[in-house]
Amino acid sequence: MIELLEKVEEVKALKRFQEENQDLFKKDDSKLLLHLGLVLSLLITSTLAVVFTPWLWLKIVLGAWNALLWFSLINATIHHHHTHHNATRHPLTKRFLDILYFLAVPNAPKRLGRYTRTHLNHHARPFHETDVDHHYGKTHYLKMKKSLWTQTLYYLELTFIGGNVPGWEDNRYMNEVPLEEWNQRDYEKIKEEERKRAVQLSLVQWGFFGILLWLFPAFAWGWVFPILLVKNWAHFLGQFQHYDDAFLDPARSVWNRTKTYRFPGWLNYLVGGEISGHFLHHLFPELPYYNVETARKRLVKNPDLSKLFVTY
Image (cartoon, rainbow, N blue to C red; front, side, top):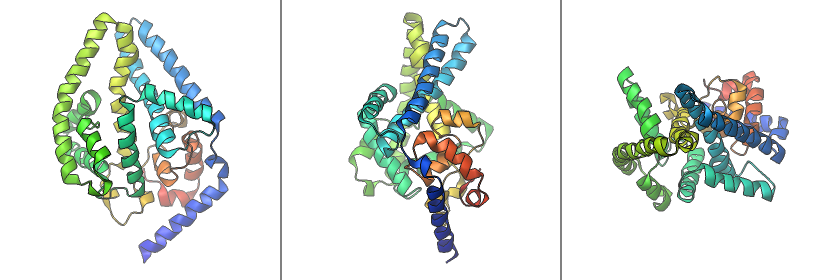
């Protein structure tokens, strides 16, 4: 009874917040283009700096920064534009995001089907038995955080190997197997095989990067290096909000299955609200991503709402 009353209170609070902040829930192509223009301007400027700077350390730092900007574009396209349809209104801006999506996301058509099915299922039933990829990522993370050595291996795996990044078999499973048949046992078998192949694939990818450093260094540093690091940002920003033992508590509502981080607002805005505002995206998936940071500031200032939904 207490749990039911708490969930009723949550529903009322969410409805009240939406009614009081209707301006944030309207798609605005001018805000979309402002965000994309900022990200693309920074990416172009930083990419030119990477190509022309003679300092290796600066190439590495700026390359990692460029990977974050690429992640922002991926987040805006496959996550918000194609999956949640919350980014744009006009046909021309929709077309622009369609084109940008194919530039930002490798193997785009196969990724889109798999991502849409798994992500919407995750929103509807977070940590349900069919939410297999989040269960797998969470279990693997908790196992690898036990010691400094395993934490180091985990960081290297995410950054340079990408063992948790969906591969061919992962995509096939998510695209072809009916959602109701998804189960953790089958998924773990797939991921164990894919993690082994990921080591081989990463050697090929980084080897390719090394060859390009000799043949086409500008292309190697300007595009290949940041794209190889995108998986790092995707996991550290797009997944860790769910990696906490408490979120497995079945008494938690679907709105209490994420946590947040205290990061500068400008950085959260730049990546589409994905660092400090992912919990808000779970509260309101229809909220345009370029309004997430503003919505987050308003919500955390409300003590009643913060008490109900914000977990740091």
